[in-house]
Each structure stands twice: as structure tokens, then as C-alpha cells.
Length: 183
Image (cartoon, rainbow, N blue to C red; front, side, top):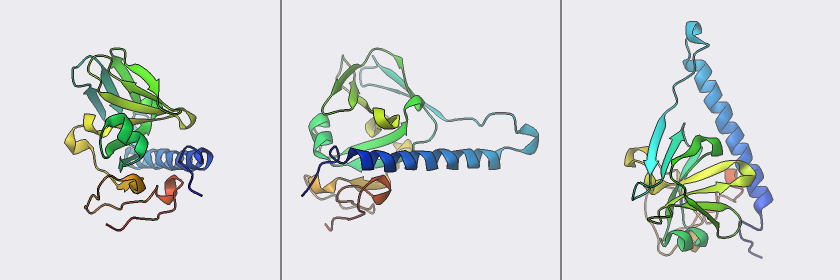
């Protein structure tokens, strides 16, 4: 019997938490390799991106590299964004900060989503149980979004033909089966 991702949340959360842990370990190892011995005590420069909603009322600062970037075709994203699929860029929650304005917070099912009160721009979703924030990929500069895959293609409105993998639900590393769709 099919279960929604929300019904299998524990498995998904455990695998995503493991992916976050591996990402943080990988970043720490890269930092150690890049730092010259005489500058070991200086911190590595972290890329910071300033983003804003369409009207500029809400400003967001994103620091560091994303954990993962993908296109989501799930029925929740379709309902929330009014789109066939949505680009998503996932970061540790503390890497995404509201620096201007007061976005509205609301929930579709369980995770708070943040939207500009003035223009309605969808800003990010907060996955509380994992300490993650998924930033709307449309807000990022085009050279800063590089999707690795499509997920939840079982809900796809129309086939999307590109060079990326198209997972029926999610990749195994995020609690899925690695089953793909053949368009």
C-alpha cells in the first residue's frame, strides 16, 4: 500500500539527517585540506548570498553550500507553488536567516513555510525535525542552482526530459528506493 512521505517521516528524517552529517563532515575535511599550516587558525571564507522576495520587503541571507539541490514534483509543492515542479535548495537551518522584513509562516501539513506578506513570494520551508531549510530555488541566482535530480515524479504533471535522474519518489540516500520513471 502506498504511503505518503509524511507517513514514512521517521525513515526519511533519519536518512536525511545522515546525509546532513556526511555533508558537514565532508565540508570540515575540505576546510582542513585547504587551510595552509600557518593559517590553520583562520576561518575559511564562507560564500554568502543575499536574496529577497519579488517586492524586496523580505531579505534572506544564505551562507555556505547547499546540502542538496533538486526539482520536486510532489503534490504538496504543486499545491503550494501553483507549479508543476519546484527547484529546491536545502541548507542547514542556521545557514538561512531572515535579515529584513517579517515573513508570514503557515503549514500545509507539518512543516512551517515562509512567504512574503506583501507579494506572496514563497521563500523557504523549515524541516524542524532535521534542522533544515529548503530555499525556493527561483530566488537563487541562476549560476547558484545546479539540481542533482528530480524527485516525486510519480506526481509529475507532464514528463520532463533532461539529463538528470527522475526518481519515482526519492533517491535511496533520502529514504527512497532509487526507482526511476521512464519517460
